[in-house]
Every structure is written in C-alpha cells, then in structure tokens.
Image: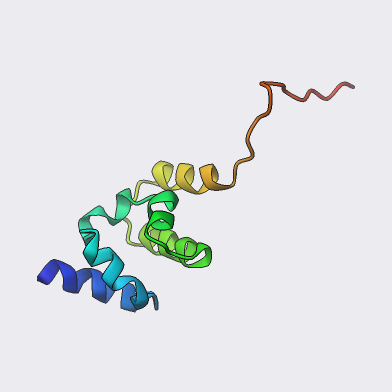
Length: 91
C-alpha cells in the first residue's frame, strides 16, 4: 500500500493526480519511473502535454540517466528516413 501512496503523492506533486489509478492498475511504482518511455506513457493514455511534463519531472527526480531520457524524447520527434537516401549539401 505504501508504494501506491508514493506514486499518488508524486503525481499529485506534479499536478497530474488524474493518472494515479492508471499507474496503480499497471503496477507502476516510484522505482520504475526512470524506465518509463514516452511510448509507455502513451499506452497508458497519458495526453502528450502531460507526458512531456511527466518525463521532465522524472528527469528532475535525478533517477533517470540523461542518455536514456534524451533518447526517449528525441525518438518521439525524430523524422523517419525515407528510402535510405541522405541529403548532401554541395558547395
């Protein structure tokens, strides 16, 4: 029960307590927050703006490695390459 209260308190702190039930129902506890990706949060039904706010709050906890967080956010907005072509600038 204490683990559920921790996640509820954290979500309340970042003004997103409406997601408490989803986190609890999916077994998400404080110790796994740093492993959550944008895609995980999307699967939970978290709105885009709220996902960004959550990911920022997770980074602020200091438990998320910078490289893992950076790759999570850049993957979400990185355009896909088409046909393996690359653009070169000629001078």
